[in-house]
Image 1 (cartoon, rainbow, N blue to C red):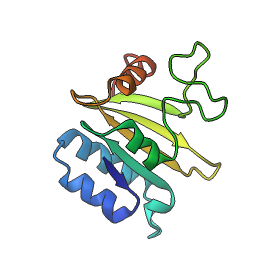
Image 2: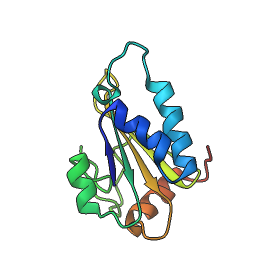
Image 3: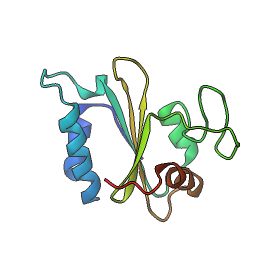
Image 4: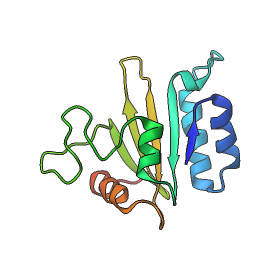
Length: 136
């Protein structure tokens, strides 16, 4: 799992990650988020890349929560009243992109979940169900 908390780490992943689609998506998001004032993007956003072999426990430790539970009402994925805590989700090429916003200032987390064999099936089921058939 990649936990990117600085502009330098984000730029490195956008240049060096082995998945070309994710590299392009990271570069796009960095360009969209850069305010041009020299501030570190880590002050605005935490980018996490969940990949094959990563565990839900490690994801929860990294995020401080799990996408499989609604932080407001405590419902879990599978409960009939469950709604996710993210602002939006989108199916991208080879992954899902989930955006969590924490404040009116726009601070938040972008979570990329690799859509591949070896990724936690429960998390992929959640992403597939809520992302629907939208494409990038």
